Amino acid sequence: MTNNFKQTDIGLIPEDWDIIRAEALFNRVSDGTHDTPKKLTDGYPLVTSKYIKNGTIDISEVDYFISKEDYLEVNQRSRVDKYDILFSMIGTIGEVAIIKNDPVFSIKNIGLFKSNSFELSEYCFYWFQSPIAKVYINNSVGGSTQKYIPLFKLRDFPIALPKMEERKKIAHVLSKIQQAIETQEQLIKTTQELKKALMQKLFTEGLNGEPQKQSALGGEIGLIPESWEVVEIKNCVEETQTRNPSLLPNKYIKYIDVSSVSNQSFSVVDHQYVQGIEAPGRARKVVKTDDIIFATIRPTLKRIAKIKSFYDDEYCSTAFCILRCKSKVLDHEFLFQYIRTDFFIERIGKLQSGASYPAVRDDNVKQMLIPLPQLEEQKEIARILSSLDSKIEFHSNNKIQLQDLFKTLLNQLMTGQIRVKDIEFDIDEEWESIPSGKVN
Image (cartoon, rainbow, N blue to C red; front, side, top):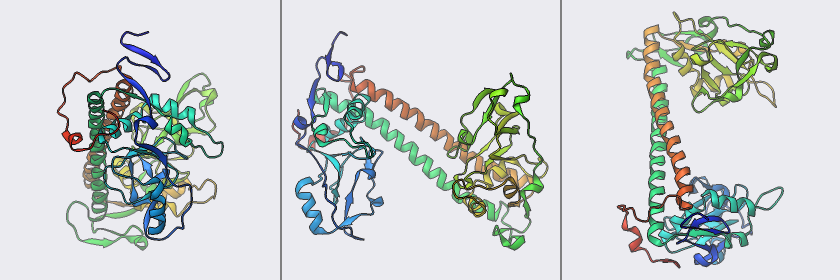
């Protein structure tokens, strides 16, 4: 036995902590209605488990409304109040949210932990997300077709409970990290919105304030500056090569499959490292640094990436169209930015064929029209947009690091591996104005 720890049903916890079942800790543990009130186009929202995401409930997404009579009837049994915790019981199980404002909705098939203490609710909100709590959840799930956790398992939920001051500090630390994550998310969202607006402006107005003209060839790409041309991509790219890696059976290759490309970061995030003799049959196309690869299977998913030097002279799937720009005509970064625009994707999406695996051909991609400014203007437009990509990447990396920190501390704080009881924090005194719950 580790010093200052004791063994419990859920594992080792500090000696001065208790294990208390949820039913003994909260004012009441219940769930939402099991009935199906009549659906209306307007009225009171009826919230189900699928609307609990990332610690909140997005009422704006709810599309099921009920009458005032049904709302009052449901709330006789399962009224939701400020500081209650909601817990998803069906489908995606274990998502939780704290109610921080007076709610005006009803719930269906959602666990309800009723509390009039923000301090208790906030601590338990994080406890329910902890690895040790997830073990209990996973062991409590039933159902074959649709997974669920029964109400009696929620009532019997074990909660490791320090004294109130330590609970406050644990919740404070985790909430500060969560706030930092949300800040990064907002910065990412704001930068993405700025970039989208800039793309629309730069690709239609350019940099020099020129008069605009309707683009040639039927005006397919809309207004562009007068000095710009409209060309097919194939006129601005070089021929690429194929090679059979099995001809060098013992040589190891890096192979980029469609699943290797992220449509969030627009980069290659993974690859297979195999000997030539074991290479997949699709491993035939040879990529070079600064090539752009565009997935022709389900092209509207935007699996597009620019090849870094790490993958120079390696292989990608035949499900990619490789675009290798003629450097004196078309800047690769300009093309990389343009083909990711919603407008380009919408146009190429109309060329898809096939029901199960909608796809386009390489020729379809290369015959697409693009606007073409002078090379220097291309490079400047690309530089502006790339700088925003760098900012998005910076905040995305910060978010990932903070999420990793949150997971690590969540586990260590909730098992007492890290103690914060003797550390002084400048904690908001919100709890002092809130009636205490069943636990001091």
